Length: 128
Image (cartoon, rainbow, N blue to C red; front, top):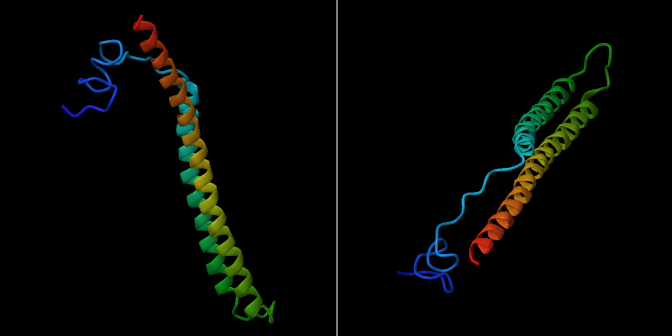
């Protein structure tokens, strides 16, 4: 059998360390996991809303570039203002979504580190 060096013929769970399967570890931090899920949902919702607002700003700038009687000289300024503002809002929406989602993933990383540390401790204690 092709096993990684130092782990015995049974792979990670058997033969090499402790002689048995990996110990079952109870999941902790249920509220923190809920917060991480809510952060992921918030990232998608806020990102989508900001992207929609950016697109609306671009369309509004293009629509207001026509001369209207109350504001006769709004042509190119309104168009470029809406275009630049909309593009900035699009980029901002993408960054906000990415960073909120990444923040939620970091929560999972830290919870996984704690779980793996606890599991390693239980494996080493069972080895004696």
